[in-house]
Image 1 (cartoon, rainbow, N blue to C red):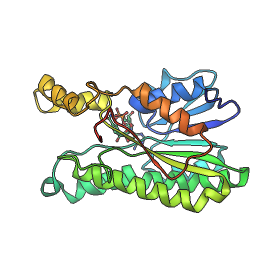
Image 2 (cartoon, protein in one colour; image 1 turned 135 degrees about the vertical axis):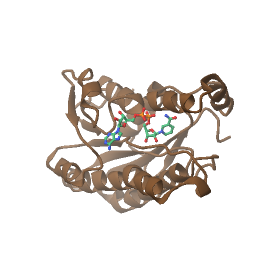
Image 3 (cartoon, rainbow, N blue to C red; image 1 turned 90 degrees about the horizontal axis):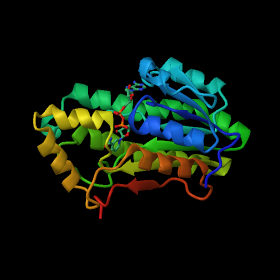
Length: 240
Ligand code: NAD
């Protein structure tokens, strides 16, 4: 069992879904957790003796740069956005937004915390990618897949540059996970049950993943001492 006592973790997009489940799991493993999101109202219910909640818009470079003043041992970059559509249906505006939220925000949080981690002798950065990336081609996920593939590239690059500083940088590649934003996507086309059945059918394990299952992997990677630079696939068998 991973013991994160004495460690401080910062989680982005912590108000719901995988981020929220990860905050609770990291705290249960003993860490002090700074849970951040733009949705302050939803964050409020999370606060406890181990969990501090705070507004952080990862698209605000100045707010992200201020993280350099914090002592952060574990960073879980969870924030991300899903756009639908093929390459022919994706506007420059959507691709630019996906790039800024899925990639540049992560670059900025890494730039903010890496010097402090290096000075303190190490750390763990966990980046949220997806199986829809360079791992697997998924229909109608062009902007998403381009940017989540970039997450794997930045993960490997930073891992290679900072392994000698005892900083491990890993990525998580989930299949379909039952979160509030997934519920919105299931309902968006007007055929909730049909879309849900199609999404479940993609998962050979026969069901969608839960945020708690992904959070268990976040805790493992936060404490694991012998893995870095790797994409950790957790996809209900979608990639078999
Ligand atoms: P979600 O989409 O349900 O919640 C996203 C959270 O991000 C919200 O609380 C929202 O307020 C917050 N957020 C949005 N913009 C923000 C910003 N600029 N700054 C800070 N916070 C912001 O979450 P989810 O479905 O658990 O997805 C979390 C991550 O996991 C995303 O990166 C997503 O791409 C990835 N992922 C999800 C699935 C899935 O099936 N749900 C699969 C693979 C990967």
